[in-house]
Amino acid sequence: MDSSTKLLFGPDWDLEEWTASDDRVRGGSSVSNLSPIADGILFHGNLDIETLGGAGFASQRTVGGDKRWDLSAHDGIELHILSSDHKRYTFCLTDEIAPRRPDGREQSALVWEFDFCTRETESIVRVPWKEMKPTYRGKPVEGARPLDVSQIKRFRIMARSFFGDQQGTFTLGIRSIALFRDSYHDNPNVTQETMCYDNEKAGHADKQVQDNQKWSFLACCFS
Image 1: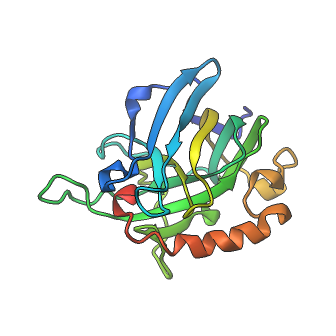
Image 2 (image 1 turned 180 degrees about the horizontal axis):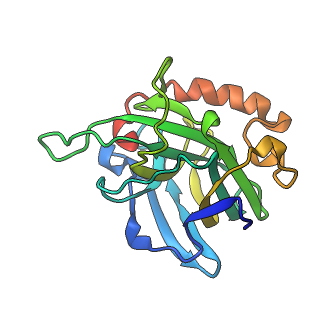
């Protein structure tokens, strides 16, 4: 890691800072876990698509709503991926935590997302702020306000089925989550293969946009 990056999480992870947020709260059967490994953590579990009729999600998010991260001095997030099953994952940021409902569940709020494609070998995924897309209950929001990177309240790593496109077990090794100051477009050490927008996956990304529009009922995932 060079001087243009700043660690947020890892490589020595405090797993008490993270908690599962899976589709089980909506009646689903998916499950996620974070487990320590030699060089970081393993995000792993199982995506079930039968219970919710093709949908499914499993995620790990930071706990609480009182902490605030000021990320405004940087240009985006850097994920240091150790290993992967070559599936698609989603990185999410939230700059507000909505009040809880009378039943104790959090209400939905705007969430900014970035879907990325992983490789089987170690790689770096850089997520510029401008590439994160606003959503509400999983649906893209046109004309949304900008993400306030000086008031980040929650981080999330998610695996989801994309309505049957992915299912079963998943594994993603992560060394760290960090901030970076330079754009990935200008960094020769970061390849476009780590992004979901490269030529190989362009057609897949178009389908992904259509799939995202079907996620309106998964409110709890994005709270």
